[in-house]
Image 1 (cartoon, rainbow, N blue to C red):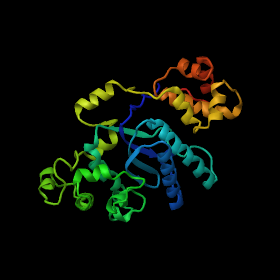
Image 2: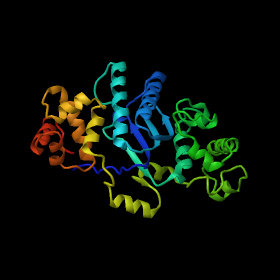
Image 3: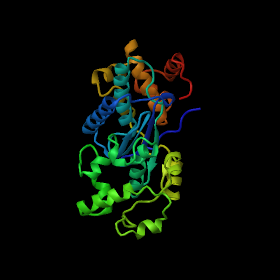
Image 4: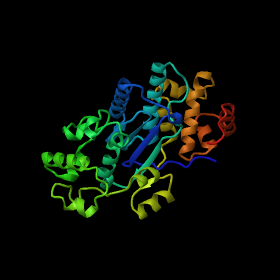
Length: 306
């Protein structure tokens, strides 16, 4: 059975969770984590998107982001593909670094930001890797506490707390550092230093955050799940992303080139395009081959489920 197409459109907010293949480590040291930051920074400069939060654990990572012109699938392919090649080279290994498919949870709007940022930043504390959020180096928490608007776009969340930046940072710290999950919403709202009801975010439980495909109210969930292919990227955009914007490689595949060096890129293109709901005939026509040729390529590589 094929996979359900991802919900993608300009301006969409996603909580992305990428785990290591078979839950194995994807980071062996701090240098590896630093290199992923470098990849994300360079990708963001070339294909603009917003980052609201991230955390790098040892065998998985979380990113809360908002896409614009470049679809999520293209961004994630570029980031994960570059990191996989780097990690395999450094570790002198071969094979998959990540699970075949990252999990992406579509978020209704920015009212969920604070709750999600807190959830993401609290991962190392809950995993007993540190006692407090600010003690963990590999999350975006430091950008908020130090008012650093670099790789992370801190303004959206902080402005929800207060338009006065000093006050907003103070409220952010108090909100993040309060790990007492037993408090009621009324108790939190009653604290004079807590975020206001309007700014403090829509409170959601951890189970809902990770288990849902869509995070929002019932009307939003029903609308999104009813139209799973809201705005699939053009096939040419998918192919360019697969080729890492190498136009010589892109043009060679478009001309129907059959050299073995193209096979890996063709396979990634086919799998990604199928994930967006395109038919085999549409995929093949875009690169000058028949739908049967597309199917035969998948079968030769032992892929039967896209």
